[in-house]
Length: 269
Image (cartoon, rainbow, N blue to C red; front, side, top):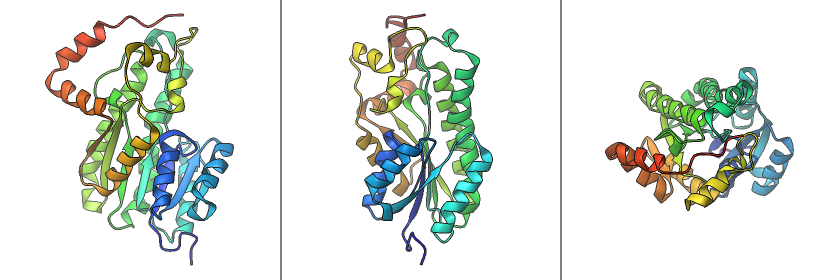
């Protein structure tokens, strides 16, 4: 018998911390076999200990590397008798600050991980998803993919793109028996909030606190991911503020724009 032992199988990127780790714990607690992947090898070891060694396996994966994607998913499939019920494209990075304060490397990093990494994951996983009846692709986008977030221009661009990719693949992959969902969290308590503006002391967490905006626990996001895996909708939102922004950006975009313009400008280096 395979290590997965007939259990449903989920492969999660960015699983060493944040939403990825919280989701891994949620799925393991429900009896799933979890593929934990990340570039943080020490974090992966701790993550596997947290969910229990019998509930998963670790894979060091840089989502920018297409060949590494192919190898990681093939390795996971060997443990699950070829099953991949769900891929959760969760890995992401952010660089916070005015658009003109970021260098080429910081911009490329966000494009390569947040967008190209998601595309590469979807492409590498499709054969395994097609071979698993009722499979589902979950792409973690952001509320920054609903309305462009000042100080997160490139990050927002990547999350808009992930949303568009998800909407397109949900249609394209239906004939394969593979469904797609896009999870769009409001700000969640993850390491991304520690991102600071270049040359300054202001982090995303600082800005949120000064604006009086809520930050939701990772467990809230993991619960929405769990519902997205078992639901039939395309879009899923984490937090009350996410749902409010979804409504406002669709029905009152002028109000959202006015509110953003009324906030103090970001500190510049």
